[in-house]
Image: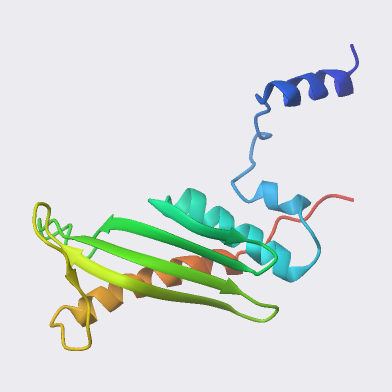
Length: 152
């Protein structure tokens, strides 16, 4: 059996491991040269693997939109021993020149209690905004990582 036939058989079984030294960005090197499509691929990967959302409402490449819901522990309070959960919806919109992240339906709560939805007068607003800024910064930093170049 040739090496190519063996590779094809492995792919069909779904057990192809990445080559040694590869990282999670390797899969993106095979996508379109179109910058928007590459950004979409990376954003979609970040949402599915990095964020691991509770629910994805919309994932539409043609529109350049990914909408999801995430419930997460508040990273600012974990070290203080306080368990507070933050629940939000996020809409990512990718264009030729920009990526927008809009958060909506944002609430926070302690386990076993009723959620409090954020409004302009909430005393926790600045803390919650800081957490959402961490989420969006994480995305934007990830999107700025260079793609690995294919050897020609």
